[in-house]
Image (cartoon, rainbow, N blue to C red):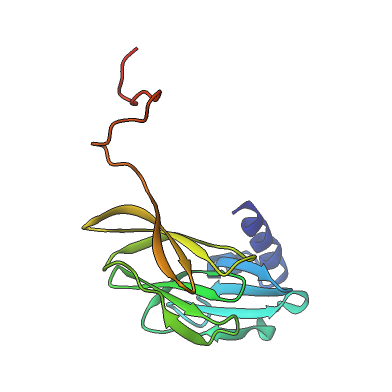
Length: 171
């Protein structure tokens, strides 16, 4: 996050001043291109790309256009672009090619909320936390082969592992 904030400050000082900071929610550098999630000219968000050396606004090329869904975040992987969006407080995750063409929706367990979307630039995989009314927060791993629960925090009813003391234990 610190690098992203620093880059956003630098870019906003070059491209339009501090007012541009409000338009940039997330960006990533991949193969000498800048991918930007912006609400500039798109109230629900769009993803644009520009060559890193000429990342001026007039050089932006929209790769994921604004739609009925609000684009909340995105993450590039080795060969995919995972795009998190929402409508009526329900999350949706879609897989796009790096040029922005839609490949397929990523199946989620049920209606719910997704958070903490992260990806690997070395492998075609992503990670996210998912929760719903029927499911506690659960970490998932996505790859082109499918999506599966990656880990689950132990429930409060689970006894602590040997050698660990519960947080509410007194001395």
